[in-house]
Each structure stands twice: as structure tokens, then as C-alpha cells.
Length: 243
Ligand SMILES: N[C@@H](CCC(=O)N[C@@H](CS)C(=O)NCC(=O)O)C(=O)O
Image (tube, rainbow, N blue to C red; front, side, top):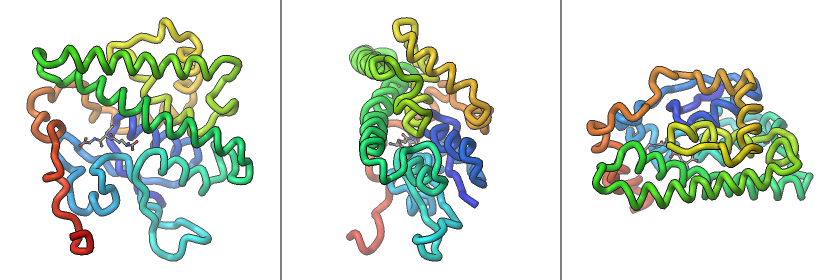
């Protein structure tokens, strides 16, 4: 059994999609981010960056010892699950395939994800009179990353050729293009790729998980204190070993 610490957001969907695709047994545990559940000491112990998703695998299998294994960061989680299940990633001995996987995994978590996250912030939450520069900057970066995807998908149905965790990582941020105020009209290959992935039953199940909890900007003012202008203060003082 795997515990999935989750909220229905693009980064949460990545892990839910992979768990649904593999058929691994899992239990979603909903965190209310707008209420600060991500700063609870028990959660920080497995996810020190105070972000979802995170997992605890209670039965990690051969080579991991008896204790449960926790993983934070979506890219690390999907890699862990790919290695555990032997699905949706080139095997470690396929050196070139693995190199390509790492490239698109790091591109997603270092580029497309954070730029999309900041675009969402400036579009949905920044005070109206302070919004413009940030909005323009991240809208441009979001589109630039769509162009990277569009170029990569020339002659390929999926980022690595076959459907893989690279697609599961990148899909959620293209899935929400419209709510981010962007459009896929200039990116036809991305639009087709998005439609192919969206049609998969496992993906539908994942994005429907706790759908009623999705934040569509309705907490615009109230949530600012929890979600925005965070500082290290919300992360506590760390363990005695760190001090
Ligand atoms: N780099 C992280 C990003 C995770 C992330 O930003 N998660 C958001 C939800 S989409 C979150 O937990 N936000 C809570 C907060 O900022 O306090 C990953 O890929 O897992």
C-alpha cells in the first residue's frame, strides 16, 4: 500500500496519474493547502519543502530493507514508481533512453512546472495593481515551454516516442492552459498530444480525484496569508541534528 499525499493540482495529478496507470495499490490523503496542512510537522518529515505530492510506500520490496520509503518531489516520485513497477520508463540498462528521460524530467520540474506555477500566481492571485510585469514574464515563459514541447513532438506521439512518465509530468501543465489564460491554438502537436493523454481512463480517474476540492481562484483573498509570501518561518526550526 502506498500513501499519496495529494491535492487536486497539476503537481498532485502527476503522481495520481502514475499510480492509476500502474495499478499500484494506493490511498490518497487529501491535504488542504489553503488551510496550511502542508506545514504540519508529520508532513514536513516526509516533504521538507512543504509541497505536495509526496508518497510513503509501506511495502517497498527487495533491496529497500524493512522500513517504509518516503519520496517527495514529483519527478523523484514518478521515477521511483517507474522503477518499482517496471512501467512507463526506459529500463536503467537502456542508457540512451534513460538519458532522454532524465532530460525531459528535469526540463519539466525545472522549467515548465515552475513557470506555470508562477503564471498561475500572477494570473489568479496577485493584487491587480502589481500583476502586469510578473504576468507578462511568466505568460511568455509558459508559451516558450509550449514551443519546446511542440518542437519535441515533431515526428513523435509522446516525448520519448512511447508514453512515459515524461508525458505524465508535462501533461498537467498543458492540461490547464485555458485556466492559465493561454491557448494551444499555435501548438497543434501539443494540442493533439494533450487530447491523447486526456483520453486515457487512468488520467481521467486521476484528475477526477477530489475534484470538488479544486481551487479555482475562489479563495483569492483569504488564502494569501497561507499560500503566498511564505518565508522559512513556516517550515519550523528543523531537527536537532540540523542545528
Ligand atoms: N517541485 C515540486 C512542486 C510541488 C508544488 O509546487 N506543489 C504545490 C501544489 S501544485 C504545493 O504543494 N503548494 C503548497 C504551498 O505552496 O504551500 C514538485 O514537482 O513536486
